Amino acid sequence: MKTILSFLLIASSLYVQAQTQSLQTSPVLSAGNPKEQGMSSERLSRIDAMLTESVEKGEIPGAVALVARDGKIVYHKAFGMADNQEGRELKKDDIFRIASQTKAITTTAVMMLWEEGKFRLDDPISKYIPEFKDVQIFDALNEEDSSFTGHPAENPITIRHLLTHTSGLGYGFLDTDEFRKMYSKAGIIDVFTTDAITIEENIRKLATLPLHQEPGTRWVYAEGLDVLGYFIEILSGQPLDEFFEERIFKPLGMKDTYFYLPDSKKDRLVPVQTRKDDQWVLFPANSFYDPEYPVKGAKMFFSGGAGLSSTAVDYANFLQMLLNQGELNGVRLLSRTTVQFMLENQVGDLLGDNGSYFCLGFEVLDQKGEARGGRGSAGTFGWGGYFNTQYFADPKEQLIGILMKQTQDIPSDDTGWKFSLLVGQAFDD
Image (cartoon, rainbow, N blue to C red):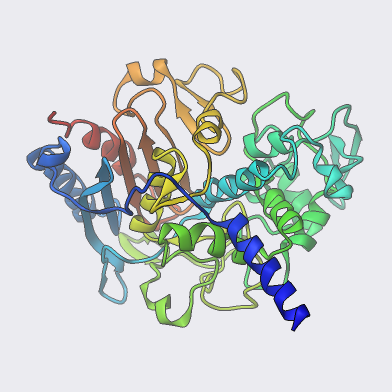
């Protein structure tokens, strides 16, 4: 009996630590009236016209668009087809592979553990994953066997570097020819797989490969969030999928977000399509994409950088939590002060003069970016996913925009920039 009571006490204390009730209670997103939220229904209908035209012209097979303001969904519609060959129409609650939109969720999980005092952001990652202790800077590739030569890095990779894409790591299939060859030879999984591989195995192999440059000296899009997915497992003692489910998805009411879909929901997954001979066809399997993911296979690889699938509403609730400065549905995932500093510039001028900077997990629009028009207010944060999904959240206007598509290797698609512009022109307050 004493053993049972001790177990229950420990379990209870872990649950309390995991889920903290908030003094604030902001409801999950629900349908609202555009007029009451200061937006014009007539102007929002321009999104209808734009997406309908894009589908009719064959620029995209279909899309789901969502706009929310002040915690209310003022626009949520589906256009076109989920699967043209099967004649399946797209629905608002269909599930999309969100790829790199996973990164923001992984970043949130990292910062939840940071708030518990488990590490410092400028700790070397080698403190927790020793294989990263003696990293090399890339010098040259041996074309005969894809081996490399390098020299020792002067500075360690820190957790902050991994969160901000300044670690020096590469990104395999998205990278230079040399890094693609090295990553392929090492058997690195860049996004996801149906094979029986764990993120621990993948990251330990990744740690043996060279860096582009000294950590902290340049912004290079990289697999840092995959490293941090494994880091979360080490610190929490849980598989990444369980941590996400218990500590983020359940509290936020994200009922359709998974690494691997249950059988009851797999028919809602939107296949990735491409254009061939003026027809929409399924995008074929290749070295980085398996059409069977995330419904079949070993179901044991949890990519912190690209592995999740979700719906527009689920992801909007996640973004609403951030707009609420860490709280949703009476549960606080992050403190107000943590969310505020997460959105501060963490990389200086490493992104150049393009109207934005990079924070912990997001690209953020600055004053120059706002002044160029069509992208939101200064402070708007967002990113996208490899299979043509995108999102933004504007703290000043308390606005969320999400556009979900599933395409690859298509000639042109202007719906992304048009969607952002058309959402912004719909204000009427």
